[in-house]
Length: 195
Image 1: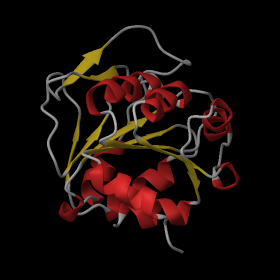
Image 2: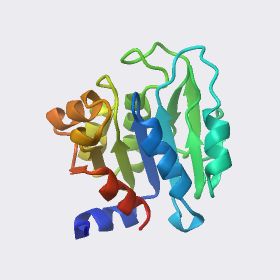
Image 3: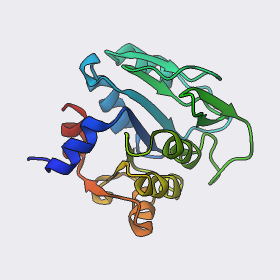
């Protein structure tokens, strides 16, 4: 299959890749992490919902299978190319104008902390059109508003085909809001990530 020229051009113009997901998103995110290489020449920021106070081996598992440097985000980390960042549990992750992370402990959004919306909205302010955002499977509406703000800022906004998502509510919410510039199949998403 061939991705259209607009998608490819926007992808090449992106400095950062945002990936958001909740229930049902672990497998595609894990697959993405395994496939990223240093030739990507972008920063990758992953926001995946996790249960509060639930110890997770997710960072260890991802790091052991990543060919790029992978780390959990700490407050005031500088965002660097060819690094995969994972939002920590129980914090919202914001991106500041100096392209550093800021961790926030305010209330959950859509019952989630980290919230995809919070990260996506701050990325729209900082990166605008130099951003690709992908929203995957999930059981609530988190991410839809943030994706819309990114689209309005000129970013490449992609939603996983709801028919291929384990939980369709999250991608469907973004589609209904008009936040998705493109709706792609899993294979199309992974084709893009390899370009």
